[in-house]
Image 1 (cartoon, rainbow, N blue to C red):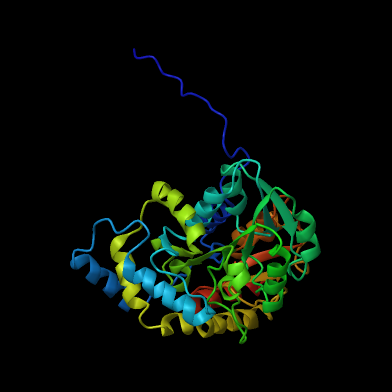
Image 2: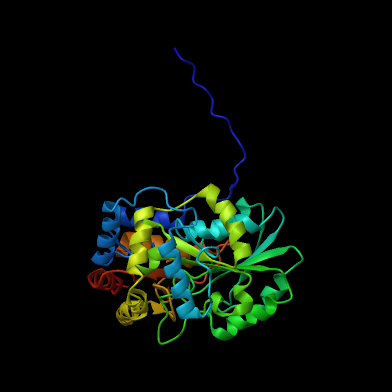
Length: 387
């Protein structure tokens, strides 16, 4: 009889990390046939023209490795878009890189500049990959809360968190999960705060084309002093309703991008070739992203109007495709327990806002996603009216 070998044990690089709340809630939603407004992905298809362009690229034989930074037509299209929208000219050859989604882009940006012991400021609540990325680089996470209730940046608190060990700060606008959008004055204030330092900025702008009510998206690329120290990250998956394609990009000044590419070539090397060519051709028509704010604002307004007929209180939604709700008139349950109850008993899955805080800070707020078909939203609203 063959002896059973023991698997070696080793110390975890991320001992505090378990299964993400998004995986847990999506599984619970499926188990209970709930409308899944938890995880942030559309339940509708992308433009068929984009599929045709990708299929065309495949049939043309564009199926082998592309250049490590990405195919030249896509990098050129990105540079043209960024310059047209934000006024910053990035060199497609040395300052634009295509990534396997925005999450990989953020990890690569962290790994290329954060050394063991370096501190990185994150503003909570925040996307759940930020802190583990920093820890994998051996960095120290310095958490600064956005102001509760408004989720605006507290610049006094940010300034107090800066030390000689601060290597970078991570900013996300439009913001997941709160759906707030940084103003030009706030971005300028950040620029002034960082001006006397060598602190880098990792600017997560994956929802850049989902800003509502006539507000502009103020990219870090649009402020010269910030652009000079920034990795600016965006996502084709979010913009074109193809989250499963996992394609994003980063723009940064050439010295920063040179370091970024050193890591990128070894943790990903390159990204799906025919999809890159298809996206480059699709970007020739800017209306696909220029019309996106109106597309999602209509869904936001439909969803918020329906929420008025429930006991949930919708918070202000300036951008992204998320809607936070205050459920304090419905339940005294903690946020995670309330979201589980909402999924199993009401049939609508949501995400607790506390999941975006390291200490599980409770505010009786849940996050819902309205990037869904109108009939999906109406079904969810009918169920929520039972509250």
